[in-house]
Length: 429
Image 1 (cartoon, rainbow, N blue to C red):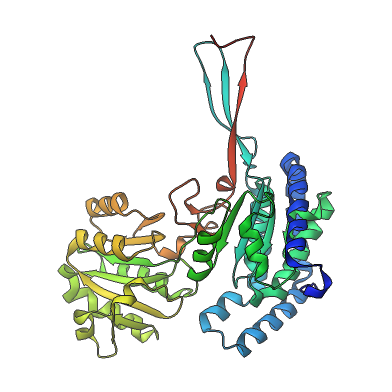
Image 2: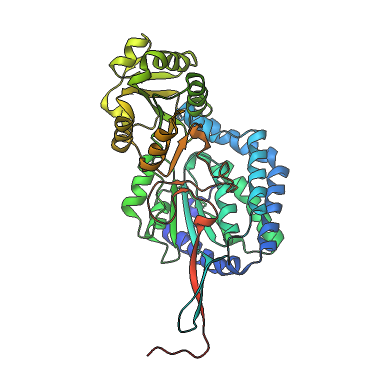
């Protein structure tokens, strides 16, 4: 079983991390030049190893779960941390799905010719070395490693201390795949120490060897990365996700969508955290929606009108409109139409994922156009905010910024581009 390295086994954390960065930089060239067949073979063999070592992974996960429970972890964190056989199979299948996707490296994005005869192509290229810092979810180890590899990048993975043993075993499976395909182990590296100083070293850039950092975790982690990083960051802020029940919403459809959006899995970033109900349908829709949630053991924190429909509703305070609960809790308020709903989302949201439920196509188009979130949805669960559901195979996270990568960060978002210019003796006057 892969175990974390003790600090006395290395000279010091900065030295260890610099060595990881330099090894990853060397590996990045080999991966960038690797053929699709070689990368795909590495991923298929990694998926086979995940299945073959499922018992070991479960045993490692049991250790992580026991430690988390002893530390008083919340139900939501335990759900994110927990692995079972279906989740392990889904992880292996996800790696295979990434292998089956078209290779994004070398794709011709644009071709044009200048009046002087120069022929110019814009070609997709790997980013280089990607640092991924994440918490809790051990499956991110497989998703991130596989995506970075398929996109021609090397990566350095730093998972949370709560998933140390699970992530270690999954990483070992990825390395088995690399070796089977003849790629360097350092193509998918993992920080082997729990010391938080390792994160600080990554944020400094590891001596110029890191090209980008992707944080995936809670608000405090992302805030630290954004504050301290000296390399570009694909920001993934918390998912303050809204479901807006418009005046034109069908009640039964609204109940189905809301239940799934909030309760299918409460601990994922696409889970709904705020319910907005249009005042025009509050008399007919608010009580049934709130009752459905409460009967499913979901706490509802509401405004005055929401409190009036059910005595079990807890009064909401101003902070509730800005909280990512990641639990069976939802905030609810009545809004005065589409403009008020959009204003609430813009004021309190995190630009992650927001949904409108309505049969009014004109209202839906306004919502989709005017809500400035990475993902906007009409008449479907917010839990579709996922790279796998978008057909990306998997994702490293949901980028909520406005540059380069936005929404699910999949293969295409892990590539940059270069220009190839072909001439025939042209010179510039």
